[in-house]
Length: 277
Image (cartoon, rainbow, N blue to C red):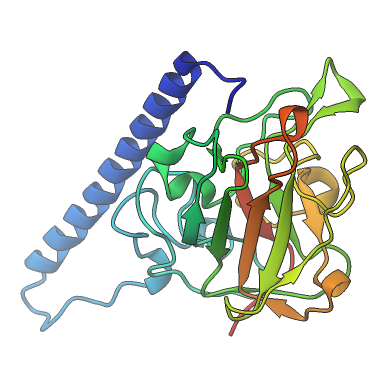
């Protein structure tokens, strides 16, 4: 992102790497303890099975699942630096769910920030910085760049009001709610990853309508259910595009916009109304 200096990139990268190492150490300690317990149980023909909801996501980052948070569907409990997510996760209807995998990504001019922390940086809950600051826990797509995210084993289902939320890092300039530093993208959804339904995003100035990237993010690391009225971010209703279910979300930076509306930075995508297969 053009407005961020190299020192911000370095600080962000170091912090993310340290967090990933801490999570990896914790995961390794738990696995080692389980191995010792199994080895000592000589009277048993085999060890008791481990609940798949507690499996590690991709062997790195924080543990998958969320037994501690009421069975929420999570691939990585935060924005770690490794692990593809989705492995060992369980599906619990009516629980919080966030993207569990990066299906594909292509970058445009101005990208680079956050790539060293992929894919974990865009998985799990958002790391919002509130009304007046933009989170650095993001991936810059670059002008015209795009990313496709999956949510397995959960899906987005059409319910009352918003069904999912896209979290970027916009903020109020000088604390003025009428003056937003926004970076705009078009959002599409798909049930099969082949056929897409696009939310209209044609505005060239505020208000940005059904575009993503113009509402500040207040939710910060909370893996609980998403309340769009307090979490911030840009909320979307599947009913608006005539869809009853979606398993993939595609976000495309608007190539025709630059300056104050250029280079979309993705933090997270969360489901308000999740469903199980």
